[in-house]
Length: 236
Image 1 (cartoon, rainbow, N blue to C red):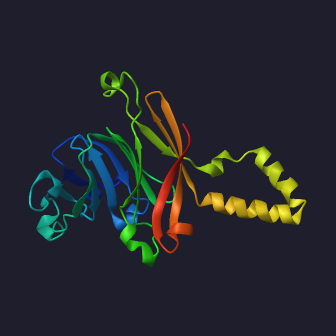
Image 2 (cartoon, rainbow, N blue to C red):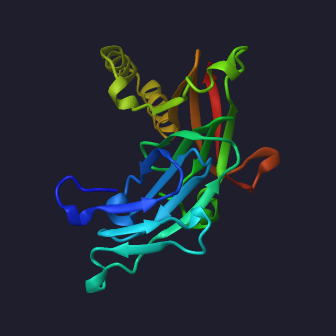
Image 3 (cartoon, rainbow, N blue to C red):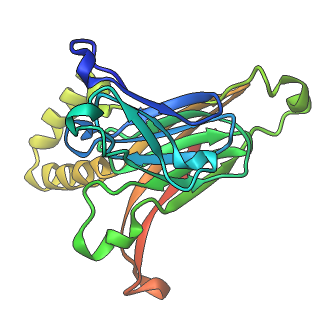
């Protein structure tokens, strides 16, 4: 991790295998957290670590991260940070993205698309849900997949629906406002949809649009049970 302004903000970390994707926490300035992955097939959560140090990740097989820092001589090189493997064993990871709210993380490995709940904006009752996977979507089932797997790399983008608002949406709101009851229903539906985060994934010749629903207290046969969240493919 490096600052473009001050060399003292540089942090070097050796994972022993090529890293193909890194995603900074939306609150990186405060929590110094990022997630990385690559050819080793490990999705690694790194928390902490002091600027001005060069470290070797504990995921390389060492007992703990080792450090040698150019600030160590003045006592600033002792914080090596903590690495946690969140997922492994399904091949190289080439894409990692935090959602716009920071609540979810998507990553893509050789087997498919994974989505997990992050530790951001969790209620006290849901703290154990941090870093738990809520969805998996299998990779595209193409006849020539094995031949093209090295070329076809999945890509993901979280959709910012605010940028998709159009004049038609504005007109619809104006029309709905003419009837108070209709306007109220429209407002409630809009508020509910904003809790859902949308994800666009392209991989080979396949495109998915995925709705990620927030967790909460279940109803019906799941009444009283708290869920982390769920994902739903709405278009493929």
